[in-house]
Image 1: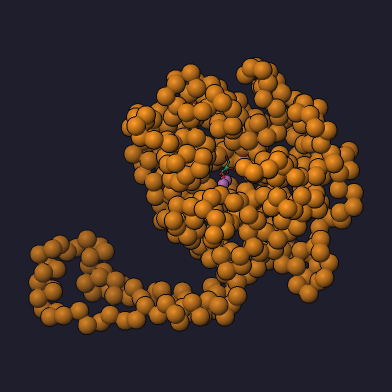
Image 2 (image 1 turned 120 degrees about the vertical axis):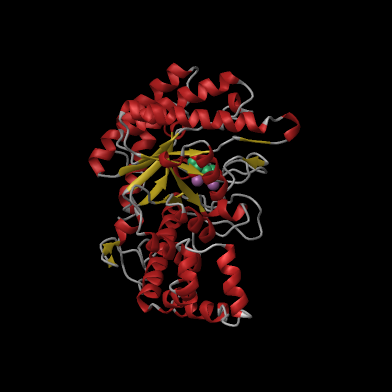
Length: 437
Ligand code: XLS
Ligand code: NI
Ligand code: NI
């Protein structure tokens, strides 16, 4: 048993007035909100790639992370030890889930066979640790963007060999996700996009992406994996244009290629903002299509135009997110996955705890605010009232498709003018929202 965090106590709920740094002020796992525990509302998850593989490097400098348990090697032995450290961390933090890419947990070998063997050696440890702690896998995925073989993309590469290699890699990643009892599997676009249309056959690449996903659906059935498949939209970075650019683009793609019944969306806050949307917009678009599965909780910086993947600390934003999620009825297979990394300046192991505590407390506040807004009912009532003209009369007839343009012309001629518009009351609503924050 490694003791990488011997100086850190088990993080527990200490209440809003506590002055103890390493404790939750808001997140109280067993507290009931709308009849469900906070633990079950969020299904918090730690991402392996940021928390255990992130070196805190940037374009201008090497990594600053101090991780005393690392021996500097990329060996299988180190990967196994790191896996135990990861579970020690998650146990102390008290999160029920984690998520990984195949290559986060085990090193790439000299060939696929060796890579698969490496993965098996680490999966053995992950399985033991899951059993020991009760912590579960929210979702698994494959890294199809780091290795030079994927320079032109994976399933959308101009090179069919890259497609084949990626398929083999996803096959294995699905198998280990299944073996670990993973509740889902994520497809994030990686390098599935383009840098210039001068060298890109867009239609052919999209067809290949769809073929790839159909093969994944077939294989899922074949191995009896019951977890949920997700697509994670992102508009750019690393490519100039990613095919899965936002929720609407993903839904359209899934519908066009007859994949919608097999996939839900995993929405990430910072990806929404990169796409020029709010997270709430993305959530509502997905919910409208009954396709919201899970979220990657983080946030960006309004002054920076890239995926900064910061821990979510914006209470207002968390309240908006939780309002949508409560209205949807909560997560089933999905959860709140912290696809977030501490800043380069926050290089000590303790900062990993502070980042997650900040995120969990922020979401807990957001949940309580959203529940209070729903209990108060005024915003909900306003919304209902705003659409009252559709509940009876001509509105009801339109919704039920009982009338067409001809009947509506007759109606409009009789109407004379539209005189029943009421104020949208945006400022009043925003002020009302603030009363709960
Ligand atoms: C990158 C994505 C990635 C996915 C998993 O921007 O957020 O981390 O969540 O492949
Ligand atoms: Ni993500
Ligand atoms: Ni991201």
